[in-house]
Picture 1 (cartoon, rainbow over the protein chains, first blue to last red):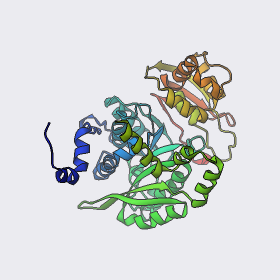
Picture 2: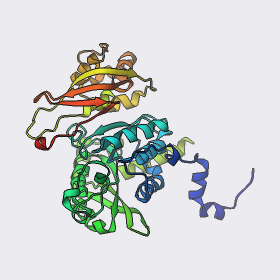
Picture 3: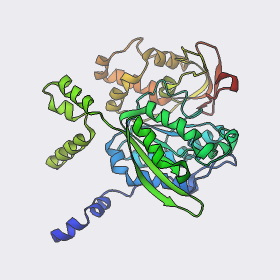
Picture 4: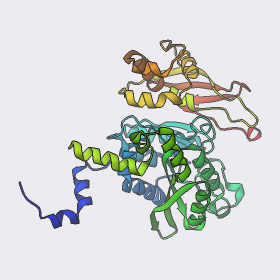
Amino acid sequence: MELTSPSEETKKPQKKAVITESVPKIAKIQLVSSHPEVYEPCDDSFLLVDALLADRLNLINQNPKFCLEIGCGSGYVITSLALILSQCNPSTQFFATDINLHAAQTTLQTSANHGIHCEVVVTDIASCLQKRLQKSIDVLVVNPPYVPTPEDEVGAVGIVSSWAGGFNGRTVIDKILDVVDELLSTNGLTYMVALSENDPSEICQVMREKGFGSKIALQRSTEEERLCVIKFWRERETNEVDREITDNGSSLNGWLGRVPFVNSLWKKGNETSNS
Amino acid sequence: MRLLTHNMLSCNIKGVTNGFPLKLEADKWVTKEVDLNADFLRGVFPKIEWPALVAAARALDYGDLPEQADGSMLTSEDFLRRFHHALLELHVEEGALVCPETGRRFPISKGIPNMLLHEDEV
């Protein structure tokens, strides 16, 4: 057995972890279906998938029951998310919505081409799912129509609906932010693409007022636009944690299980002791 | 469309207060086997409206679900198998979902329910 010097090992812990893991899979462009009225995977789609890839250990540890993509277009993103999770989380269920029937059909085809099953629904944002999936979505991904356009183009028929974002590109985004609040589970994560013109820091402020933490997970400038992926999660209020401690009495494990950060440390500790 | 999805859909026409469950009318459906994961089924059970699942399964000629279910049944392998089959293995390809309050029909075509509303329904 070869011995590596400790200094070398501490320098590259990340790389080591990646090598022992199998190469993460995402959707293959040549297997993505297309239709003249459906937005093809582009820089924004690639950025979103890159953000998911960069956060994949968090996503896997989340062991999500339900994932949802709002505005699935070609299906490139939800299929990639499903492939990222498929190995460790084979029971995760994937839902996708689009206002465009052609996009819904294309997504179904793209996911099937990759051996993935995704439940696709034609609806505006997630309106027909909102009542029954309240606080149930563990991972929510969205590449919204963010391009500033005249208001009357918003929600238009066909491919226009995939980009037309109204005033400052915020008309649909602002509706989606309300839906995020309704649908995201306690420990759920949201990843949303935004353009600098959409004012990402103001979006984060809106979400802060709803009790969400946020950060720019990834950003990239192309010739035409400056894009970022914003990640949102529910912040826990201190008094909420206090109440749960009281409710659970002396059950330390029960309490730890409800605190995401401590829980992940706890799990890690257990894994180390098992190996 | 799986019956899991049927269980999560409701009609959201403006003014409708009782848009769930949608009545399932199925013209064509298929069965696709998937691996059973008991932990997933136990985790998802509290989110399922059982009578809606029973009614939807019946529309697909699957009558093996008990009329009522509670958490204690989740220890039974037989129950889990039936629950799993109804929830995840039956796929509606063609048919419709009907709003219980207004009778509005939402078509299911090539496995995709179209829940888009007309302008005067929003």
